[in-house]
Length: 388
Image (tube, rainbow, N blue to C red; front, side, top):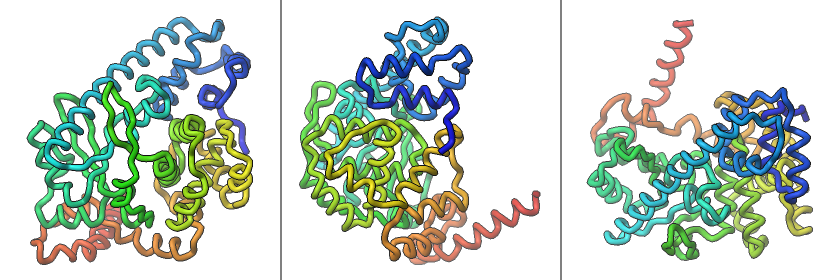
């Protein structure tokens, strides 16, 4: 595996599961006068570890950290805290509104993850709110949000919206005044991805967590860990912060029921994605597991190959674009051959907003959107070729 650039190495060290003494020693070894601090700050934001960087460096007495950098880190940390507190207050307000209307809602990621895993909403960086609702409530939720000043990121006709609900997993909203981005989910990932977690069963397996002085219902640690690993694998673990979330979850929830988690991941064809997330948490950030789990994580050589690819991508400090290599990675992380075939067949027909807004069709002809997608893509790429 290649050597990471010094700026990425510093971020990995800050995110590593060190003892306090081990952390200080590791940081001193990496704080050189040659560090590009502008790049450190840029990458910390990109990898969603800016609060962690500030938290780990604030007590380090080293001349290699310029005072201007310390001041900027503190400024950004405080700005992130204000943002997170504002988002937390908005989330609680939305949950109360949904409850008053008889709408069941599960918040996950965002402030809930920060409070549950880090014990402090200030210590995690997040940009939006994610709320899971039941499919039949999506349009009711949409109308409620519009009444509160939120606007969908795109406008669809009823026929387009019906097709979108079948082919997608989330509805994105923005509140321009509050500058809040909100994602309403009814699935964890889009159907083409082939991770068919039964979200209806999640509603019977919730637990209470504390957030902002309130008790709210959220996902149990087993489902949350599996979802984090599927989400990270889908995006090829391009952020250090996602791997750190796995480390935090494993370490703060020692009551994790590993056997049912493995059984569920096997049933869903997500064992390799779970293994990959846990392998990266151990290999890159020093997570520890029960001996039987440490053995289980190491038993798939393909996971080691995928982890090496993730490491090289992280070390290059450049996010990966969805090219052929990206889709090859997505195929390799599925352990069942029929899931790989299904993914390959579904992906070309996975409708996007661009497909649905390409032309407006009546509800009776909404099935034709799947036929029009190849036409739109052919025109798009032909135009690119002609433009050179």
